[in-house]
Length: 286
Image (cartoon, rainbow, N blue to C red; front, side, top):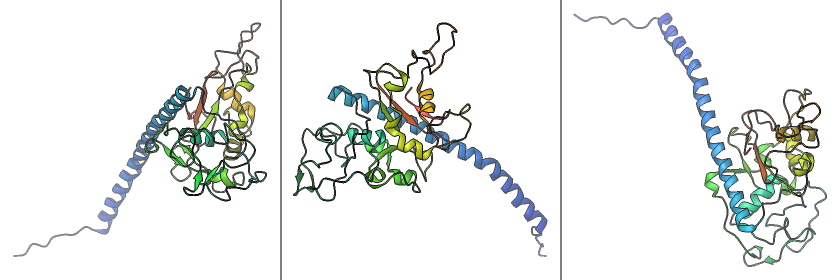
């Protein structure tokens, strides 16, 4: 005698599907949070790697990499004999100069005769037509291994931007990994140790084209220190142990005695989860 097996009813099937959906709705946020935590750990490690590479650069070269915007950094292409017109392009930012200094535009190492340290007149370096790149002088091995960091361009970070054209859009920068589709550049600022005031030791303008373009204006400067304006940047890098008014005992980044973090070295800033520079989730070296 055959025993008839009873199948699932529609109600039972829908109940099972609902339970699975509920379990997934509970599990997915936890999985996403775990994934984001892992990326944050990786980004902190990458920032330490870049920080150590900068220190190694300084130990070998006698100074930290520049972060000043001294003209445009030209890629190894185009007419090697022409004076390039830079009027239509914003200058490379501190983030660009850092990559060029630690790795080289061609990714085979820093060289002395590049535009930020030697030439500032817009003329390319002596060109080697056989190799298809400038003649190398005093080439140094890369100070950081590319497999230990994330590298990209402003075109990937903000494809809709109108601020980035030509080389500033295409030249490489170190980037975070917290937003896979639109990663943010790692900002780099070198301290000007001959200066003494907070807003002179570090220059907001070193990465202003990046921060002005990416950060949004909340209209509420009292809750988040976005880098849309210089004041937000200087408050962000201010060391609150300094700037105490002797008469009131109140510390302020506007006091003449205020000093930034890392006043003698450099600052690195990863935008963090919210992809905005100057907020509490940033990853920094201070």
